[in-house]
Length: 406
Image (cartoon, rainbow, N blue to C red; front, side, top):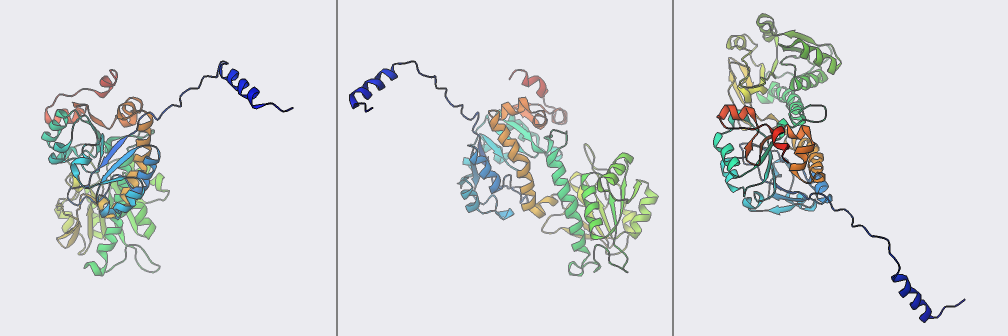
C-alpha cells in the first residue's frame, strides 16, 4: 500500500499534537575547578605540584588548569608537555594567583600572598616551625581557605603525603650514603652493601618510623648489616614485622648506641618529634669515636637534627666534615629526586581534586571528606588550627563547628 505525501504530512501533524514524553535535562558536572600552579620560588624546591599526566586527567574531566611557565623544568617537565596535556601556560605570576584554587608545594611567601585576589583556596605544605605570623594574618584578611597537604589523611587515617615523602627520603638517604662512601666523593672507597668474602657495610638507623623503615629496606637490599634504634618498642616490633626480616633492634640506650656507632660506616638520623625540636640523640663525643670517613645523614635536620654536630646544608654544598665524619644535613632531601617526588604527589592529589570537583568544590569536599577536613587550618579567613592559634596567640575555631553552618 502506497501512501501519498499529503496523507503522510497530515499524520505527522496529528502526531505532534499528541502528549509527548518528558525530556529531562542531563545533569551537568557539579563543579568545574579552576586550578593555578605557580613556579616554586623557595630555596632549592625542585618539585612541582602536578605532573602533565595528572593535568591531562583533570582537563579530561572538565577542569581548567593554569601553570606558570617553566614550573616543571626542575623536574624535567617542559612547558610543551603541559600544553599538550591541556594546561594553559602563563607567563605572568599574578595571573596564576588569580585562580580559584592555588596548588603549590612549598608554603606561600609574603609576596605570593599579596598577589592573591581573596576568597580562594590554597593547597600547600604547612611548616609550623618556620610559618611567619604575618602570612597567616594576611591569609585571614583575604578570606582564604588554606589546606596543609601534609595534614590530609586517607581512609585509614594515614597521612599519605608525609608517608610517601618519608619513603622517598628513607630510600634516598641510603643512596646518598653509598655515593659519599665512594672514592670519587673523597670517601673511604667502600661499597655500601656486601660481597661474598668481604665484610658488609655496617649501617645504624636511629628511628623506626616510615623513613627508617625504607632506609632499612634499601640497606638490606644492598646487603648491608643494619641496626635500628628507637625509644618505642612497639615501633621496633612493627618495623621488623613490616620488612619481614629479622634485623638487630634496640631501644635507645646510650652505651649500646655508642658501641654500635664506633663500628658503623653509615648512620641515618630518622627520628622525629610530634611537635617542636627533635631530641639530640647522638652527642659530639659519640661522633668523635666513629671511624674516620664514616657518613652521617641527618634526615631530621628540618626539626633541628638528632646529631649534636649537625648543621643545615643545601643541595649545592650538601656535606661538611666534623671530627673526620662526613655529615649530610640537607632538609629537603626529596627535591634531590624531584621528578619521582612530583609523580608521587600527583598520584595522591589527582583523586582528591577529582573528588573535589564531584562535590562541587572545596567547600563540598571539606564537608563530606573527614580526612581532607583534617588538613584545613584556615576556612574563609577563620583560623581552625589549635596549634597555630596557641603558637601565635590568634583566635581560632574548631572546623567541626564551622561545617555545621555550611
